Image (cartoon, rainbow, N blue to C red):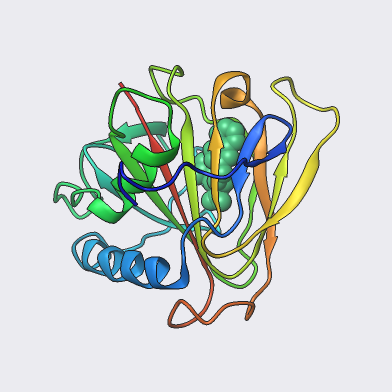
Length: 208
Ligand code: MD3
Ligand code: FE
């Protein structure tokens, strides 16, 4: 993906979230996964603990200047892995997707790497731990299908769901930046991309 690539096709619109199904070819997905493996070797997946003391079902790690983090002390961005080392750099293959789809003059400062295995899910929530909401959040899905639910900015009300599949890219910008969203479940075994199965989702964000 580069500046000389052809213009993007029109995205689907899911309550203001733009979704490009299959934006990444199978070869691009495999190449990105190899880049991520190198990052995860430096910054292994761990299980975050909510402020209420519950271990999350999603495994996490991050790349870039900041990683989103939670423990008993609360939600925040931190500049290193719990093992004490700085997060690895965001791979160029991932940055290229941001530059192609995010209408933002800045590069992302954080790439959260979520791993969903088996019964992992993520409840409806808003992403609001960032200091700046003018740039979008960009999501890249790899591996098994995930049932993605989008609601509204206010709590409650209607929601709409779609299955995100490997290679899909979603952009949450403008009014959709603060909508509630979550992953109800994955479909284990729907992809052979990841060794050991499961779904990886990358979320790219400007934080400061
Ligand atoms: C809609 N991750 O890490 S990505 C998260 O698939 C997160 O792992 C989910 O929600 C996942 O915070 C969903 C799609 C997504 C990300 C950010 C959003 C949708 C969003 C921000 C605003 C609205
Ligand atoms: Fe989120």
